[in-house]
Length: 293
Image: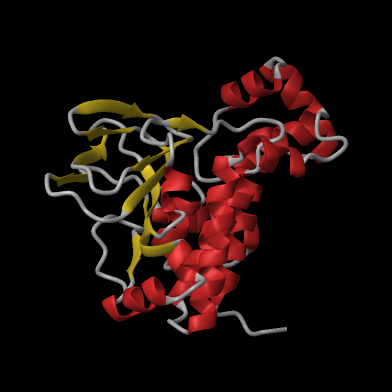
């Protein structure tokens, strides 16, 4: 059950009480279950205060911008690539930075295992992109959970979504193991490493200076090596990756176009449409409705 949008590109699902009651009594789902889930891109003026505590834990993962939260008077600043979990049963408040509002993935959850996953997480935890990070994989996990719940409320579907949620929280709780499990030979090549960094930041706008700083080489050297290897400048290649991701979202999800814009780090839908058309030779709407081959 989705409510109307409040931010451009916003998506969220509130699970019905009947489903929540079923999950509490289910031997599998009672261990860990989602009650609400959503995504708020560039959520200007986002603010929530709960002087009366709620029974669920609140997970927030900031992928861009900045924000803050308070738990019983203790204030924390939140930056991009960080997450925190607000404890159940305690008053709290949180919101976006007014000058640089955050983009967040958020989940309310409960269950007998919830305190384990939430332990020590009432402070911001940084998850910065690195040569062995797997941020994109984690984002895809979130989208699979969301899509599964969005498809309906069958028992097997909900059990599958919650099994994915165990894994999703595990990628954060056991970060070192998650990253080491995804290590691949050859990733430390300068071009491959830069492309990996791009893929980890598809929801952001990167500059050549940031790419250069990450690679450890000058902008001119990185550009020359990148152009020689790929045939494109670093930023042009980054746009190609964004449009490839946009195609995947157009093909594999029911996301609205304004949501897809934010998912590929572009806030202006008109610019997104022009760039997509330039790269793909047709508009995003035409691509989504093209005949099957």
